[in-house]
Length: 135
Image (tube, rainbow, N blue to C red; front, side, top):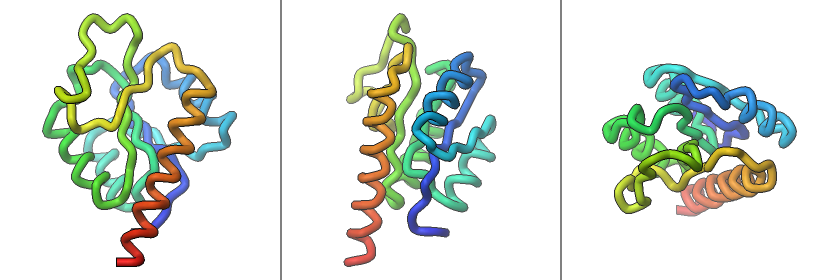
């Protein structure tokens, strides 16, 4: 497993906004990998951990076991996990009710906010991996 990966992993479960997300990340020149199944996403993340994982699709499809699988991997590799959600979603989960994700990206997506999230995730992974090397 390589120590630092410069890519964003999108776990897409049928989101309509994939093209918008790909376009915004393209402007940031972020390499990205889109997966459509749990198996694909976990295999790719285990092979080479991304610095940012975006869960895209309907919120009920983010099962707790799925999020916990990603969280276990994220904690060892410094991966930031965010969920893409809609501003008009009838029932957002509070952060304390969904401890597996680090935060939410709210649609409509804004380039400045996405830039901040991408940069923060990259710094977080860099810091995490640097500390692991010192230990």
